[in-house]
Image (spheres, helix red, strand yellow):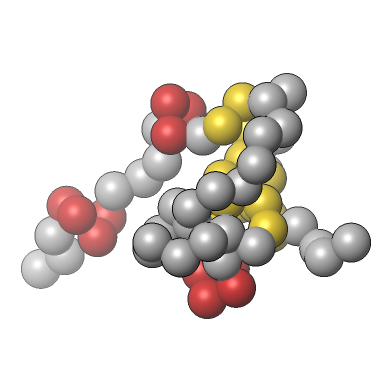
Length: 68
Ligand SMILES: [Zn+2]
């Protein structure tokens, strides 16, 4: 029943390289401004997320960062 759209996983190309610390820009899951980054559990990169999509990031094996 699940569509491929909902079941897609992040490839390494979707992630910003860990060494590339640029501005967060847009949330990976929506069009809002991202407020934090979430680092992938294997440490290979991170994505930008907004508050509303912290859970989605966790579901995709990312670890949302804390506000500093
Ligand atoms: Zn979002």
